[in-house]
Image: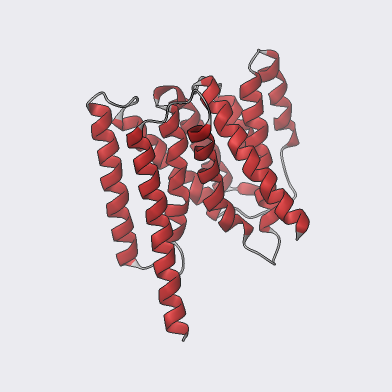
Length: 246
């Protein structure tokens, strides 16, 4: 249990380092850096592995086109999708959560159209869909000992090209996937569910507390609202289940 907690902490730190590295590069990183983690798990992933690869490619392409804060904040949709698709959920919960997510995203896109926030509405939609595909891949991902270790060798040319931050991002993402795979095999606790909440939160928090990083207020407000939506929905569903059990 102690080792699992330590591994969980290290994974959270990797998420913070990764988010900070993306902000330093301002999204100007080769798409290959984000493909490497997906390639690493591709042999065991099947359709889910291909979906993850596609999601990371699309996300990498759109990074330079979007506000970095927005690109990191969009990952808070992971716990939203997780809660809305849980076994305790129902069609009314899905509709309500969907309405909240759409409303908040429309607000962000209107802010972008007015020129008060970097990026474009289309890129915001594309990144949100990429996160949805990544969530689908993660939820259908079955752990295995088969990995494409050769893909890690692709980090060498990235480093040699004078892109150490891109190489660091590739290593951090791969490390997070490896840790999630390891923790997901433990029957004692649902670590992956906790990681789904934690990693998007600590990644965005790393930007908020980092000196010199500007997190626009609209992005921060939407991020808080999405996190609150996921938390309140999960709380209501848990309370309803406990009442039914009693």
